[in-house]
Structures are given as C-alpha cells and as structure tokens.
Length: 640
Image 1: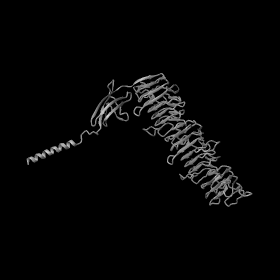
Image 2: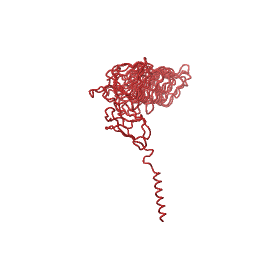
Image 3: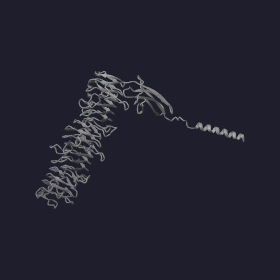
C-alpha cells in the first residue's frame, strides 16, 4: 500500500511539472515591448516636453512636462525619430525592442542654429538641412538647384522674397515628409523654431509679412512636397507664384494665412504639366489661381482639417482667361471654379471635361467660345452647376459679401459651341443666370452643323428674349435635347427642322408647388426652317411657334403626336401632300401665336392681345398644280 501511495505521489509531481512546462510563458513571444526614457537639452540638461517620437511614419509618443515618454510597440528593431520645436531631429538607430521587455533610452537633442541668408544661391546650387533655421534677410535669387531637406524651417523678414530663375538653372527641390514638413513662414512666427527675431511676444505674424516665392522659366521643374507656407503674399498678391510656363509639382502642402487677391498659390501662368494635388488651403484671401491648361482632381482641401467651417475669405478657384491647349479635366467639387475675365476659348482639337458635382461660377460679362469639345459629366446626385459668381445657393458665398449682392438673370453671358460635327455634351448640368450679352441673347448656343447632346439639364433664370436661352436654331441633325427642364427664363428653346423633339423635356417647375414656367412658354422654330429627314415633334406640354415659314420639302417628313399645337407668327406651312403625318390626330391644331386657347399664352402678354383671321397665311399643299391651301377644321386664324 505504501508503495502504491508513493507511486501516486510521484505521478502527481510528474504531471504537475509537465503541465507547468507546457503552460503559457508570462512574456509571450507575441507581447509588445515597452520603450521609455527621457529627452534632454544636450547643453543645459533641461528636460524637454512636447518632443515627438516616431518611427518615421507615425507618431508613437510625446514627452510630458517632465521630459518623460513611454510607449508600447511590437518586438523588432527600429530607427526612432525625436523631433521638437527649435531642435535638430535626432534619429536613434537600431533600437531593439523585445517582447514583454522594457527598453530604456536617454536622448539628448541639440538646438537648431540660426543661419542668416542675404546673398543669392549660385548656379552651382546648394543644400539646406534641418540642423539650422534659415533667416532670409533680403530679396534673393535662386540661380541654381536648391535642395531643402525634410524638417527645415525658413523664415522671411518683412517684405522679402525669392526669385527662382529657371532660365539660369534655378529650381527648388523641397521634399518634406508628413512628420517633418518644410516650413516657409514669417520671422515673427514663433511657433516653428521658436522666437527667431528675439523679441519674445512683442510682435506676432500676419498675412503679407513677407513677399513670395516666384518660380519662372519654362524649364523650371521645382518640387514642393509636404511644405507649409504661412504669412506671405505682400508682393503680387500671392505667396507662391508660378510664372512664364514653369511646370512645378506642389503636393501634400499647406498654404494658410496668406495675403493674395491673386490666390495664395498663383498658377495662372503656369505650364500645363503643373501638378497641384493633396494640398490644404485655409485662412487665405483667395486660395488658388489657375489657367485653363491646368487640370485639377478632387484631392485638394479648402478648409481647415481641424475645423471644416474655416475656409478662405473667397472660397473659389480663380481661372485665368487663357486659351485651352490639350485635354484637361476639372474634378474639384469642394468649392467653385470662378471665371473672372471676359472670353474663355477651347480651340478645335482640344477638350475640357468637367466632372460630377463641379460648380463653375461666372463673373459679369464672361463667355465661352468652344470650337473644341466641352464634356460635362454630371450625375443625378452630383450635377454640374454653371452659374453667376453672385449665386450663394451654389457652394455658398463665393464673392464673400454676405447678402450685399444676389444673383440676377443675365449676370454672365453665354457658352457658344461651334464647328461642324462638334459633339460636345452636357449631362445633368444646371445653367443659371446667363444670357447677359445683349448682342447674343442666349445662354447656350449650338452653332451650324454641331451635334451636341443636352440631357437631364436645367435652364433656370436666364435671359433669352430675342432668340432663346438654348439656341439650337442652327444646330445639326445629330443634336439631342432630352429630359431637360426649363423655367423662369424668357424664351426657353429655339430649334430648326433638322432634329426631332420628343416629349421628355419639361417647361414647368415640377419640383415645388409654385409651378413656374417661362415668360414666353413655347418651343420656337427658327424662321424659314426646313424639315430635313424624317422628323417627329412630340412635345404637347406647350406649343411649337413658327417665327415665319416652315417647309417640308419632298423626301422629308414631319410626324406630329397627339395634342401638338403649331403656332405661326406669320407665313405658312408648305408640304407635299403626304409628308405631314398625323396632322389630324386628336388635339392637333395649327393656329396664330396670339391664340391663348390652344397651347397657352405663348406670347406672354396675358389677355392684352387676341388672335384674328389673317394672323398667318395657312397650310399649302405644293404637290398639286396649282398649289392648294388646306381647309382642315383644325386650322385656325389663317388667311386661307
């Protein structure tokens, strides 16, 4: 029995040891390690607070008021970056972190030196590093390549700036990082690099303290990546000026608190290969100025990321009235593109594509001449808006005057599409407050032989008295006008006889209970129009008004749907006996344009005028010899 008990005891001890050996280690191989320590000033030994510790990609910790830090991280070997205001970034290399263990560090940082700059950068070039703060004391010329490393701080004294002369070989390569951006700012700015001007709090930075950085020369390919531009713009109303066709890249930058009626970033004369992406603009006067040859995607931000209600004084992108050259895309849909100067031209062979949700605001007297291709790709949920600069209902108060001004019909002039076979297109595009040119009298003009597609668009609050808001009187046979809405205009639409009109368009506002229509609510047909091809007219919501004679020549035909009213200001309808189809369909009438009982008040004068016999000539069948004047019962107020 004793032997048995002894065996049992030994077995229990053995099993206990076995299970203990198979149990989990208190410091598992998957546990993170801990890195902790202090950061001190190398000379004074003062413990430093607000020092960021990162692995080069993300901030891992920040020292507290006692200069201490502590963080956990997966096991491995790291290069740790220690950076703080006024100190040279220190990289502690090959820091080994073990699972479940504590790694202790004692870090010493050296203060950044101040380096005074008063002379030009020579054609041989230079490299500026982040171990010093650069004070720019005078206007200087960059005559060779200047490389600026990440984390470098450059401060400008009052009223000075740079001229980067690309013709002499000057260019700037300023490539910061997300954690260590390059900073261009005022010497009154004590936030980056400390109190550089040594006056403690006697002065503070302000818009326009220093001038700007002017980039010029067609061969200038300067690069700004992860840079920050503060408090500039006293010269030429911008902080960064791209001139004389220079092609720069500015990406992931911040432009804030800059003066500039020409845009904090003025790229109005930049080359077409200029890249402007992933930048942030806020606290400026105008954020950005471009020309028509610069494409913009939707990656730029025009508000403070920390406070999205804080934008710029004028939240718009100024567009210089240059001539477009190439295939350009505008997709920025956070703020409006603002066209400010007279005539904008798209020559033949060139294309501008406008993406969903984009808004284009026109200042007074602005017009577009499109001999190339204008493609507007709105969607049902993100239409494109083309409107007045004073229109606060579209992307807010762009002109920054509160309620001092408001949009009105005719604020801007027109868009004119020209060129035989021009296949420009407008889909889900809204046209507001156009038609201001007294000699043109339209908002959108489709020239001779054009084959433009206009679908799901709105035309609202536009002038067009003598012609029409949408003037398709010369348009070609490939023209498509479908599913559009017209209201609060004067004359909504002018057509000819070369393309068909179905019943998909609306000429009344059905989105509200106001049911707004147009002042002259009719589809007007250009004088002396000829039906070309087999054409159908199906719109029964309002009348078709012939401005004079309509001809349906042999080998062509016009088909009418039920409830179609054709009105005539004067003249006749001439056809060849068998090429006017459904003339006797239910609800079809041929009458005077003063006849309000059929097709409504087309001449827009209420009851001030009334129709009378002889208002127009009648319908003439030219297949007989002699011609025969028809006497159908649905022909009203004709002479014959």
